[in-house]
Length: 100
Image (cartoon, rainbow, N blue to C red; front, side):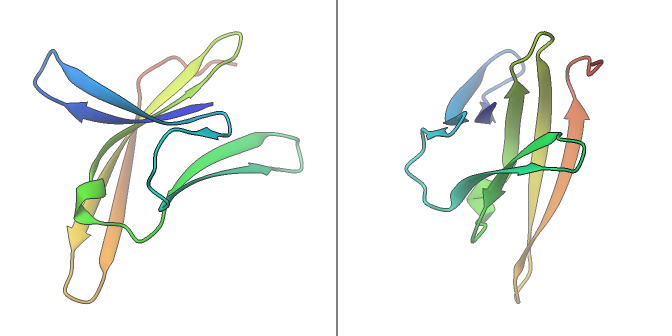
């Protein structure tokens, strides 16, 4: 599994910053964590967690699962400023065929 942060420069250019490749961490930010859970059907779920969310965390994140048919998801994280706390809104958009 690979998690990345995507910065869109314009319609044709983007910068990709690796956060994790498998369990290897590529970011120095201690607020980012990778978790893996396995359900009763033995399916694995790899989650990127961001603790103490900042407004600067808003943007696009990508997750790629390397398999026979790679699966890729693009997530848009929207951080809403509130005087009492910061809350999240996460919209996911499939950017690849997810047939297994």
